[in-house]
Length: 301
Image 1 (cartoon, rainbow, N blue to C red):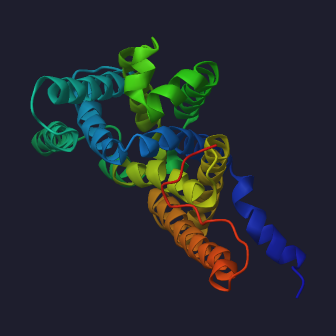
Image 2: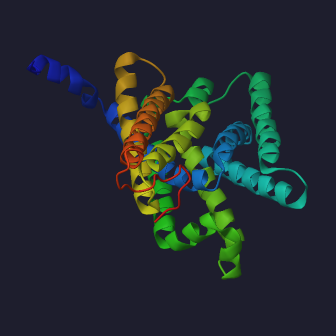
């Protein structure tokens, strides 16, 4: 069955519109950015912080509007302060990090909802902020996404070994003189910036999944940290672009489309890892020579 010219024209139709081209560029940058940041979040066992900070930053976005502060500046500062407050609360008090994240971020989100219900208006559309509206991305949003993506990529490229050391064994890294406190602070700022520029594309409710799913899929496919980083970034880009493309035709939320596609890929990767594990055990069960299967939490090479 061949694809006719009419069918091909219909498939390429979205790219005739400037807003869709901007949406694809924004989605690819945000997808790769979330995939890259997600590697360090997942390996640090901080999956909940992406969900929490996205809600906290929503509150900051509303407050920045009330105070007539630039959205990107106000929301980023609010997210950064929220991350520092979580770290301070956990360090200075006998409170678990998950409890601190839950209290601080939900309080910030509730503040945003309270302000919206009081003023009944919000210049950055309420539904777009919650569910994502990538087709509404303008040039200012695209520039902000590009700047944050470039900064994050350069920081991880320059400080790759420091982040790697601090991620796997913070105590040993500190013993060898790695400034883990500064690394954590820098990471919080980068994460806050990532979530701020991702809000328009994915929406507050979907950012956490976009940050967590790609690195988990990559982890199921490889035990190499370097390969996991590249795979997670690539998976984030592919899922974001395809999700935006599908959402155009199906007419659903862009953020939901991206996350559902990522979740489907996760199911496929999980099934493949189970099949591969059974194959590797089969020769050993038959008395043949085979490598021992690696555990799901195996070490990286």
